Length: 232
Image (cartoon, rainbow, N blue to C red; front, top):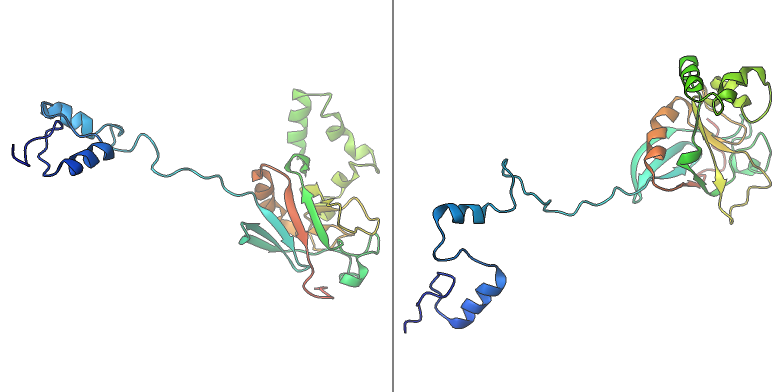
């Protein structure tokens, strides 16, 4: 018998070991297949547009964003790679420095690690949007309609869009972050940079919101001032 005798897959392979290896690697067309059957065999796994039915590469999830504030700018990072950044500020003029972190209502956000929950993102609504929400669900939307009549309380920020902007989200400190007893700190927007202890990104809050909404879990926020004094 010739060493080039056809094997049972229809191809002449010179050595038995090579024939066995070829069988293990991938099945080959049968010897008695018609031209149509061979074409269907080779095109198996492709659609009519010759695109693979299954993706060649595994789709990986986009990493959740993280935020970092250094006293001058707020950075959005994914896997420690900067995706975007905007000018930002914390504290009132004259108190925008590391030494004033413990000064309530005047100093900047204390250094440390925080988180912001996408589910706690708050938004001011224009009157047409408020009326539409009220018509859809009067009970849950009642406070959004009546807030102008309440000068104080948790919804009073809605009366001052120039100070808060259109969105805000509360900063939740980690257990090892020393806040010096301070609380009710947020990331928010405004007409002019500056705050009573929050991280203010001015008009760029609108650009930050989509990053926060895209996260599948609370977004980590690191506050690390690069200078002792960062007043603009």
